[in-house]
Image (cartoon, rainbow, N blue to C red; front, side, top):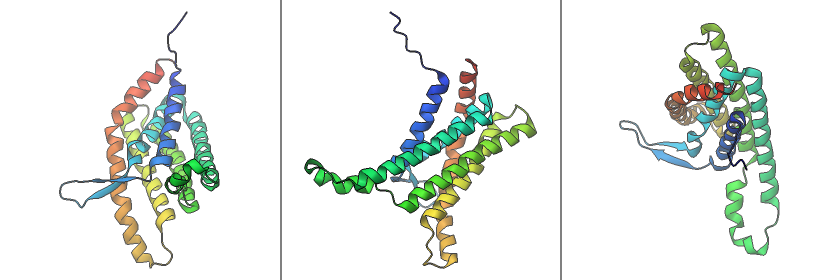
Length: 219
């Protein structure tokens, strides 16, 4: 009997991609402090560890299989977010059985995302993901197949800037406050969070090279 564990590499990448999306949606509400010498204490979502990986996987698949294959995966990821959000609404509105009454408030707080936050997350993710693929392909058309590190980081940094700006604006813009106050507040959370994402993108650059080489072995 053959007991060897065979896993298709593309299936593994897609599974990891979907897992990162689910983690960011379900667990991304928690933030943690980051102390950088000379700067005020920054706060980042725990999703900072998985979101750059989502864009990294995009670039690996685009490099090996092309933009249309990646766009199909992005669409699948968007459907996953929609399913998660719709099921969260259903689960938090169902009456809990007597055994779980005591934990129901905590459950609802964790999984009961507001419609505004959900819409902001879905909109920002959709725009950023398709933009990442588009920029990666355009830079490759200009520079050829070399400078993968540049294509990866340029596409990631620009797309994650849009992701951060769109999400923060849609989720936290207050119509009861003057425009100047909103701009100041949004800049105070957008800039440091985007810089943290850029740092993670740079750190994960070697993964793109390793991932492309690894995926091409079976092509």
